Length: 234
Image (cartoon, rainbow, N blue to C red):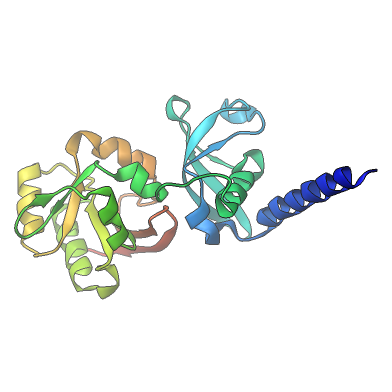
């Protein structure tokens, strides 16, 4: 075997080992390198998914102790939780970390930019892409009633750890948008809401486990869940 072939083999072995180490490492801790899209490497007959299908990675999460799943939006083929081993996520993470694949912005910035309006004391405002850099993540408020919305907004206002998050209200009840804007402004808090025609579809895409409760979900800018708090509203 000549020197060139030995060098080529060594590089291949290094890449295989590097990707394998991603498989065994904590995928949840690498959210900054999560790709926006992933591709299936095999058929998943029980989900009617085919090898080569591409979906948007909503997040990786721990389904049970030591078992990580990927929540993926496959568009018209639906939302599915799949094993990382069925996809090319390890290869894509490795490429992002080593500069072989560009990641222009965090995943949730790409997912949600231009989909919401922030209410500031003086105006309504749409964030420019470069302004997302001023925030650490997102705080999603999921109220089931007007009372629940007030409780969640009060929590957000007085919790200093949320002041560097983009606060978004995603109500699970009917409320006139103008009334909701007025009530959010009463808290003198920079908070926003999704455009009404997008609300239901993006609640489904985010698929946070709220289950009919008043819930606060805090994520980083790539969708990793950092905090989940359910409120008891009397």
